[in-house]
Image 1 (tube, one colour):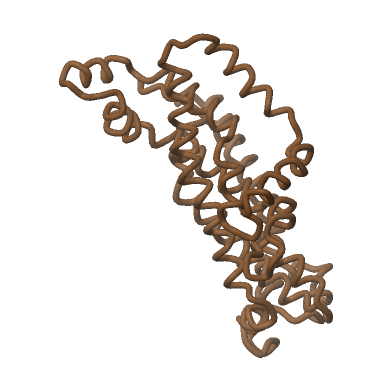
Image 2 (tube, rainbow, N blue to C red; image 1 turned 45 degrees about the vertical axis):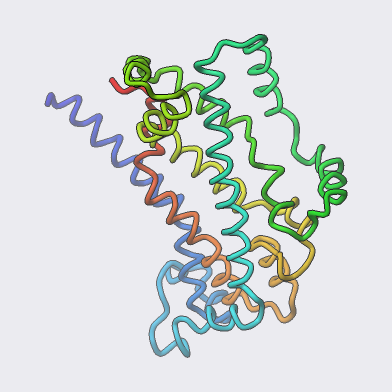
Length: 283
């Protein structure tokens, strides 16, 4: 490797590492603060100690804040509700949006480009502008305070349909033609050929849907007003409004709420990068 190219690569890696450290600072501070008492959190705020764990003799127990957070509110129930909510949207969303994207990429039908334009155009509509009529519909169907009311309105996703369509446009048609020759039906081709070879775009859409809906606040606040149906974001707001505010416990609850997002991105990041970078190209 030539020296200019090597130096350029070194500078790039150093810069990216520096930016990564900066972006990780708030996360590290939150986790370290979740292990401390309120007095120590504010005492360490202006020093490097804010990003370091407390000494064993400075705390009653490293996980005392986590224990107290789970005891003060039904945090486990809120996490389970969010998992059911987001995973339900992901499972049904992957099926519905992938089939819609495949139809737009492969099938010829009247006004295909028009419907694609309409789907893309819905991306500019603020979700808040349709919450009232959507809530009236959910209320009339008797879906308030149910997982159905939380999940069903968000199964179809315009951005997910567009990603699937772009991915499937680059998918090799030879594989589908070979499957047709072998007598495979169109449904069989999709589920037995297309889906197994499309892991990158499925992982990309799964991550996008998970992050979007794990952080949802307004819709769960409107539809799930019963304590047993609260999601983690609503539960955190409820937790922070309970006096007295213990910031160590708040940081512990925030850390617990952040863990699922980190885990899904860590395990699916390889496919996520492939899905965005290659858009279905297998070459």
